[in-house]
Image (cartoon, rainbow, N blue to C red; front, side, top):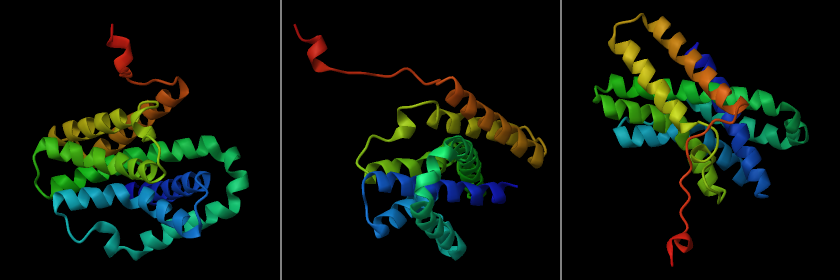
Length: 206
């Protein structure tokens, strides 16, 4: 199940990256590059930080073909994308949770300590979107809108808690995935977010 969700997620993320590139009026190469980085950037950064070589997508060329195709297809069907906004939000939420759990599993397999395992999950979940927004010259959306990075953190915590408690793997996966997806969709529906820190030096001057 997780593999299927992962493939759906990288396709959706690639398309979101292509749309972001289109808003910045990038050429075809730029669209494909941003699509690729958005979809696979989180896992790449994770593997580099953990010393997990070779990087995952280099061993699965099909991931490259999938993300490039998704980026190019987005250019063709862009005029219809506004009708699929709700579907994209759901797919993105599924991707966030799936990437987070996969990231945790990678760090667990490498026998890293708990804090590193959690950060591995969070980095895998959110860093593709961060790289996309940086390359598109905008503040990362995952850090300023509805609960997103914090959902990844909570999913990682729940998954590891159930894992360490000895629950069945499939049950642990299902519970973590369901709770994370529900929390993200609730945050979107009711626009839940963390308190925002707004600093303006002028406000504190006499």
